[in-house]
Image (cartoon, rainbow, N blue to C red; front, side, top):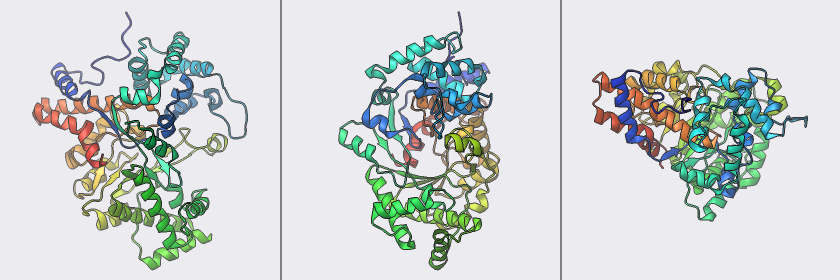
Length: 470
């Protein structure tokens, strides 16, 4: 008889006594509600509650984790249903796309994508055979038939998954139409926008000037004047907050922050909007605007999130042919100690301000981020993110950050995904890995089991609820 896709002891310690502790801890938290305070699901799914189109459009084409690994083995993105910008041909038959994934499924062995997809296959659709060329069509048929049923529409799945709150992410110009529709619908699910103004804060972004023009039109402020620009950003933050937002998000290239006087800030703004800015000016402007965003968060109560250290769209050919978010964003080293010093010196002890920092540079966990979070009351460590949203990434995070920052200077787990059906899988992996870590501490007599159970609950639910003001 073949082994089940999901072993009940997956990710638990191999040593029997420690595994027993992990099982007991996990049993205490496995069914807690899911909080997803940072993610990229489409609010239109929940506003319209329309059926998902087909298995490939749901689970393959929009998932950059899947795209990037298959592309690394020579599978053209066109064959995975990704449309070229130039209107060139691409695969539109969802069953053919699904067979491409099945043919390459062995490539995902021991990756987090494999864990997530197997969880979706087993827990959401009741499949128990491993995906392969031999099972591809049977899997496709089961999933396609399920997606046509009311029980597999977005709102029904939200409720089935036990989601208590789910945050989406929108640019500064988003009209929040879908969030307005949700508010008027009477549905009790909680879908919250998150304010992400990257293009409007970065003079090197290709849409910077267009964003300022649209900000002016949208808010009635002159976004090409320094005071009007700040007023326009405040107005958009207020619009997001009125639709339920509790947080902002900033994907800057570096964590550099810079405190400027009004005169210096005005002169810098004039240069970056007047076409005379150097790359150094652009970096200085981004750094100063993080200071301004921190001040606005202190004023309006929105939690500030920072995701630095990424060289986005590393491959210009992929960007030109297919656009962004195709798996080609790559990590960069980040200097948090020096970069965040101006911001933390000004706001790090401010009551009511929270800064949640994520990183792709794991070398900073024990050297910089844990010591900073272990001192400044305003700073919290985000969950292992992106390439580190994985069992080994979570293990390293707990080992490298825990001893200095403790558990309670983190925000628990945030799934940061566009793949809605993978949310329960991602939270399950995080809960199992945290229970495995805590079980080892219990086995080593560094925690008693009851205290470990309380910490497991905090990591799974309480910390995110408090940090994101949910």
